Image 1: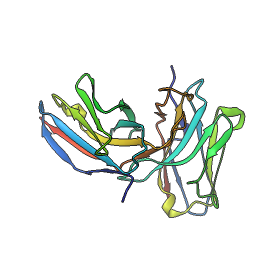
Image 2: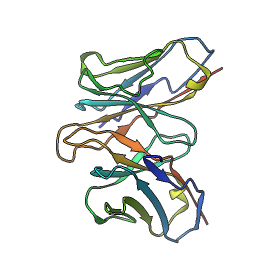
Image 3: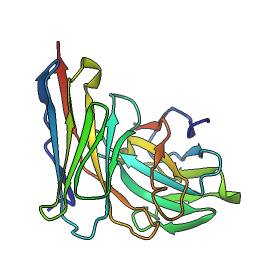
Image 4: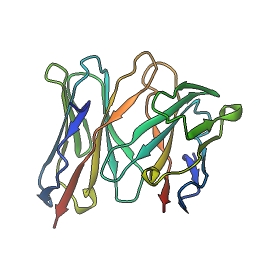
Length: 113
Length: 116
């Protein structure tokens, strides 16, 4: 079993719709979680971090964390063609300031006009 | 604030040749990471530095890979000799470090290595 699993996609949504991206992880001790966006040929860019169960909203993005079920999700409201990218879920296996990110393989999102 | 700088951006070499990648982290960031990203996969950690000390190199293939971070700032990752399977993007990331929520890693643009 992979430590961090994501559906590779592509996830295709029409412009203006809500895109829902999911991620599951295997280490119950993980404390912090991240979503990175990666455009083709570019480096990953942090868009959301979440540390506590529940929802965290930032503009059109909402991250959701459920530690009991070991999943993290990212919702993108009012999706735009510019959101088309690969979204990487990362789980921090470290603690106490020690950071060891394990990345999923990413979900490719395609937003069509 | 300048971001993480990497060079070269692209490198094409013949197998068995050596290659080196350079990274300059964000000013003041004590923690530096080297990742390898294969096509269609997420980044995989190779080595992590706290200042000049390599504190996690468990996933670095030590028979052919080496890294250094002299003076706790810039870092160099070397492969010698390169193999076909080393073709990938090599990403450097830096982090402010410390406790609390200073755990955001900022990535450089990467070096795309092609081994022929």
